[in-house]
Image (cartoon, rainbow, N blue to C red):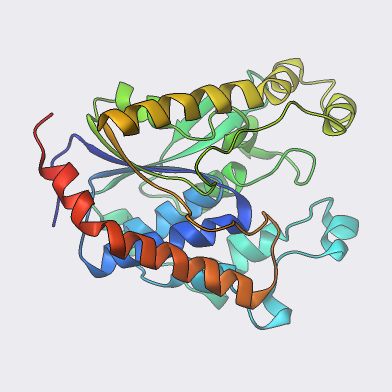
Amino acid sequence: MTENNETALVLEGGGNRGVFTAGVLDYLMEQKVKLPYVVGVSAGACNAMDYVSGQIGRTRRCMIVENKEYRYISLKNVVDNRSLFDMDMIFDRYPNEIFPFDFEEYFRSDIECEMVVTNCLTGEAEYLSENQDRKRLMDICRASSSIPGMSPMVMIDGNPCLDGGSADSIPLIHAMKKGHRKNVVILTRNQGYRKKKPGKSKAVYVAAFKKYPNLLNTLLNRYQVYNKTLDLIEKWEKEGHIFVIRPEIETVSRTEQNVEALKGFYNHGYEVMKDHLGELYDYLEKEN
């Protein structure tokens, strides 16, 4: 089932909460639901790539790693690489060795895929794509997933970049501005969730990014932008303008490492999408 070019798939990030999205997308891929445009942030960008390459189960395998040798979260990473996450493991060893990514199928796909990064110089979101260069593709996804204060900046086209969620956590407005009138949004937080104003993290941001005033301003005001976006999402969802899938049980944490908890959250995403597939079809077939 391939939808017309007005349909978009919008994927929120959230670290290991993205395993919920993996469950949703695996079910959609099994049902051959192929949407023509996808935009993802952070873990959502990783999910987007596997959706485009059609690799059912790959994101799940990357996020639920039972072999401790291949896990990507450890305090050792902080000491060795100034990053809680082993980004070389995720964006080099995983795609090229451990959990091979099908670059050829990705580049051959007719699905348009954009990943969101935050330009550290401007503090603004950039929506990037790559259809030929393997390294640049992985660098964009790495930048989109690089949490401020937890991961080093990534150079993209000469600009230092970090987590796209800093500037645009849920790029629904961007998808609409591109002309997509049918939007399927996959969130990784529960109904009613809102971000709080920065507390202790404010001092960390100020110390770490004083040389990047635009980025600092974006980080300190992220909660307001995020919450306004959620207000719009809930309004438009109620009015039937967009279709939203979100967790219906308590979410796991961004850094969750318990294998059984992650499996449960993945299965929840799979089952929620299965339960709502008929509603999704109705939404996609409905006249605007």
